[in-house]
Amino acid sequence: MKSLKHHVGKLLAAIPIALALLIVVTWVADKEEPQQKEIHESVRTMRVIKVPRTDLIPRAIGFGVAEPGRIWRAMAEVKGRVVEVHPELKSGAFISNGDLLIEIDSTEYKLAVAGLEAGIRQIRAQLSELDVEEQNTRASIDIEQRSLALAEQSLKRKQTAREKRAISGDEVDREKRTVLTQRQNIQKLKNTLALMPSERQLMNANLAVSEADLEQARLNLGKVSIKAPFDCRLAEVNIQEGQYLSAGESLFEALGIAVTEVVAQFRGEQLHKLFTPTQRREFNLNLDMEQMRGHFNFKVTVRYQGGDLSAEWDAYFTRIREGVDSRTRAVSVVVAVDRPYEKIIPGIRPPLSRGMFCEVELQAPVRPDSVIIPRSSLHDGNTVFLVDEQNRLRRQQVQVAFAQSNFYCLAGGLEGGETLIVSDPSPAITGMRIEPVHDDILQQRLQAEAQAREGLR
Image 1 (tube, rainbow, N blue to C red):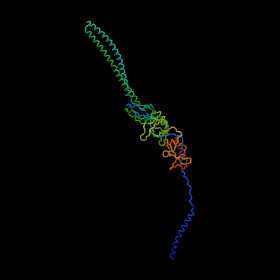
Image 2 (image 1 turned 120 degrees about the vertical axis):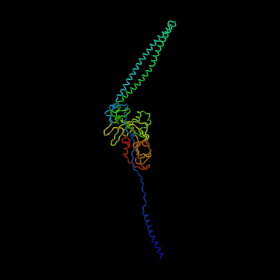
Image 3 (image 1 turned 180 degrees about the horizontal axis):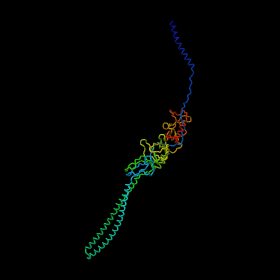
Image 4 (image 1 turned 135 degrees about the vertical axis):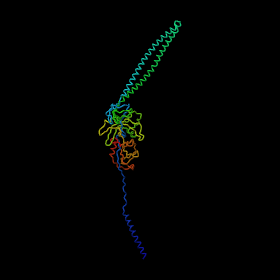
């Protein structure tokens, strides 16, 4: 009985397991075989442009401060009291070339001139007197020499008579004394004549000193009148009528209005790109200023921006200052604007005045058929990514000539017209499929920057 119950229990326990197995087998038998999915190649959308081959205007931007081309710091060269002052001798006033600005009392200097002129006339009279005296002395010597000849003849006769005992020895001695006296007179006259060249030299030296003193006195007399040496605008003025001036005292400062210069600083690589290879080979520091200006045949524009006010002027290159800034390694280029005060437009263009901080743009002559690319499209210094005819990514090595604004000018690697990727393609896989989207705005901006129709950034 117990054995039967034991077998029935095992049977009942096996039934659920058998049912589970039956269900699994049935599910597996009814399941469809897995289907293989088709693999599709990924495509990346990228912004592209056609590589421009265009006319390029090399440009460089520098900054500097405007200064007058000429600055006159007037100082009193002679002492004295101010007796006259120009009515417009005030800071900010415009003064014309040749205008009398200050007159110093000239009485002392006129007296000095008169005294020296009188002294010179006296010395010249003494020289004339010496000339007459020299002529008289020479004439006297001639007379005395003839007298000496007669006395010597008389002495010979008396000596002959004495030998014959016709006269006494005293008479011969008296005649000898006469001859000796005559010879002494001649010697005195010759001594006087010999001293005359020295006297004349001394008088001529005194005359030269007096004439130099007279010239200086006349110069001092001319310095009592202070006139404007060129058209100018007055800056600081420290003078008034009645004031006593000392020599060397500062009076005022005047700024020339004919030319205003701007000393702008440029990095060496900025200037380098403005020259063609031929110009760079021919350039050297031994060129004169005309030859130097021939090399710097740039279009120059000076701009000023102050709040809502902006203005620009046409300018020209004048020179390069000596030396390079030790801190920035910048070169100082001096440009000039002619007649800046004549170009004033009230409310629109102010005068290019001293101290204005300006932008200076240099433009070299056009270089046709230049190939340019955006800066953002260059990778690792010499690689760009192109889209080929099958719309696949391709790498291309390029050579950069120089950088300007937002683009590079190429020296090789591209001919122009290639489809250039301007998006970031990372990761860039050669041969991957590209869906190009043309960036017309970037293309137009690039062309505008190359042709100077947009400002440099």
